[in-house]
Image 1 (tube, rainbow, N blue to C red):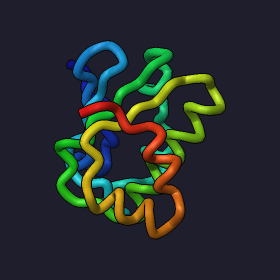
Image 2 (tube, rainbow, N blue to C red; image 1 turned 60 degrees about the horizontal axis):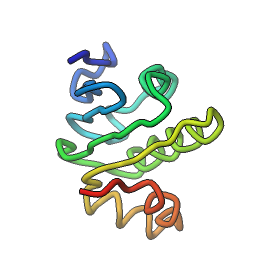
Image 3 (cartoon, rainbow, N blue to C red; image 1 turned 180 degrees about the horizontal axis):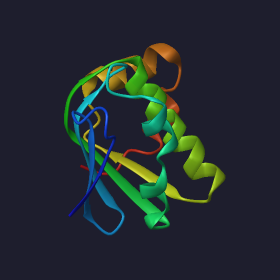
Length: 111
């Protein structure tokens, strides 16, 4: 396993489980997502099909949804197939409120 970490906020960690399969650990919140994380999309280039498991996300807010949307946009632009697993109910509710629920729903991997 190879962790991809933001050096300033150790609470949010992206861990490679296997080729193309990643787990997000920590909080997807405004306090933990900064410009470095938004710019660090290198892990998305590791395969043509990427799966991101959000099972170990403890807390999330609109910044977490914004990050997911940025990942989606990046993957679409670069012809990478992106799937999310175990999306927290908070994120689903935020996506629905903001009208992005269909975009997120189209990326959900079978649990």
